[in-house]
Amino acid sequence: MRNEITFKVYGRMALFTDPITRIGGEKASYAVPTYQALKGIVEGIYWKPTIIWYIDEVRIMKAIRTQSRGVKPRGYRKKMNTLSIYKYLSDVCYEVKAHFEFNLHRPELAGDRNENKHHNIAKRMVERGGRRDIFLGTRECQGYVEPVSYGEAPGFYDDTPAIPLGTMFHGFNYPDETGRDMMQIRLWQPVMDHGVIRFIRPEACILVRNIHKVKAKVFTPDDICSVDREAAMLEGDLP
Image (cartoon, rainbow, N blue to C red):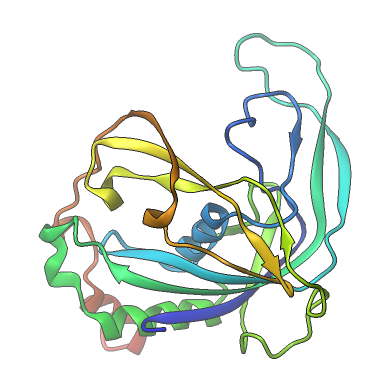
C-alpha cells in the first residue's frame, strides 16, 4: 500500500469504549480496538492537517482477556462519592497497518503535500515511539509503539476461523475530513478472520448518524511547520 506504515502497539491494559454508551457511570471495553482508537494512535505517532490516516488492518496478537477495576469518576454536575466498575482489556498487543492520503478538503495546504517527506517522517516517528503520548482507548491506558515486520510474528488467533463481532463503533466523520459542516458517527459489523480485522474505509460505512453541526478548524500555511522544514530539522540541516 502506498504511504504505508506498520507498527506494534502494546500496553498493560486498554479500554475501547462505545461513545454511545460512554455517558453512563460504568464503562466496558470492546474485545478489540476500534478504527477510531487506532486512528488516534497513528495520529499520536505523526499527524498534520495536510494528511488523513486510514487504518487498513489490525492483528490481535494476544489472547483477549479482561479485568475489572473500581474507579471513582469525576462528578461534573455535583460532588458525590461514587464507585463505578470499569472493565478493561488486560495485557494487549496489536500489529497495525495504516496509510495516509492527502486531505483534499484543505486546498490552502496544497503546498505542504510532499508525499515522500511525509512518509519518511512518519516512519521515523514509528521508530521513535511516536511524537505524542500513546493511549489505548483512554488516558489511563498507556501504550507503547515499536516498528514491526507485519505478519511475521505468531499471533494467538492465527488458527482461529472467522468470528463475527456484531455491530461496533467504527469512527467519527469530522468536517475537515468530509467537507460537510456536520459531525457524524459511523457503525459497522466487523469480522475477525484468523486474528485479523480488515477495516472498511469510512465512506463505505452505511450505518451513519448525524450528531450535530460543526465547522472545521481553519489552518493556514503560517499555522503549521512545513514538511520541508520538518524534514530538514530531522536531517540536522536546520536547528
